Length: 421
Image 1 (cartoon, rainbow, N blue to C red):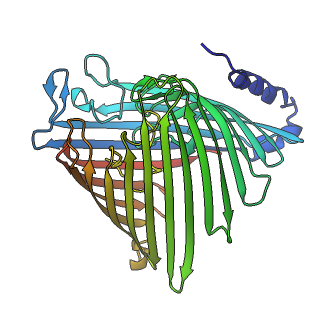
Image 2 (cartoon, rainbow, N blue to C red):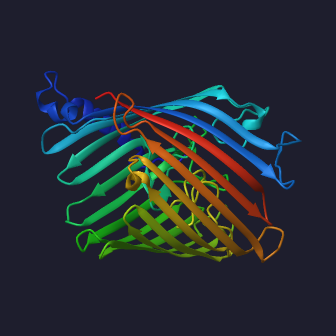
């Protein structure tokens, strides 16, 4: 196993944090005073029905539906920084989920780990700890945490969030410019308590190295981002993004344009890879209504490349159930969001979107595969009282394909964040 300097940093930085905290705590005022601790209570029900004889086989049996129900506890404790030229801090993420319902039928919910016999685990969890140091406007973070970057987005779409173990440097020394760089070497997926190697299509690579920058200007209305990443011996990927928001009378118009290119890298353990993404989303907001149209085109011979378990949120047509990222796939989306505050019901929102896709190059040799998806979300967040900030979300989805599984899906998610500190 390769040993690198960055893999020695967690212990060294953690020891530095401890050493920086004097017994009297005088110089650690920022460490405590700026600390924030929350306990998130997440209740998650998931039900997916497979339609038109597209059921998957689990332990040799057709699975007509995937169903599960969990109660999760997410403790998020983040310290401030100690006083001094270099400030030190510590972040802790405690994750634990309990099965309320779901056995063999839970195999495709990704709410819980699944044992070799096809049964869902009764519970699972893990603890992620990250040490951090800050000098001026530059921060170094080493350990394990919920990392969200355009080229590596941890997924938080089930019981517990995905986390990565690694090191990241973030610098804001120049006004408007944020620079990023780092390396991740372990991956804990959203339905797993273990820490595995960074992988793609279940093929383990080596470290995931990345660097990027985002520049915001025009009163923060415009952003240009440039990123590059390498999952060593698997793939390399570059991403360029432009976003812009422009008030026009009573309207606010927005654009999100992006280009991604990726190829195999090093030993190419996953074989020859070649993918390009051309995408754009245009939005228009007036009052309590937001409208969006989006286009996404895959080029090359392989699907969009991302580390196993990560979110496809970089793609403009990524949704609850599908990312429309198959080889050569092109997809269109229309979407409408409404905030019911305009009708005197603050906290209530609704989203509806429809995506149509074609030109899919399927694994069976077809080059004209098609699919479509419809997704809706009705959400309400309590605005005041003892249950303030408790949110309830109902997500309803349909997907139809001639190159894969057809499904109808419902999710009910209740989140209640308790502020402890």
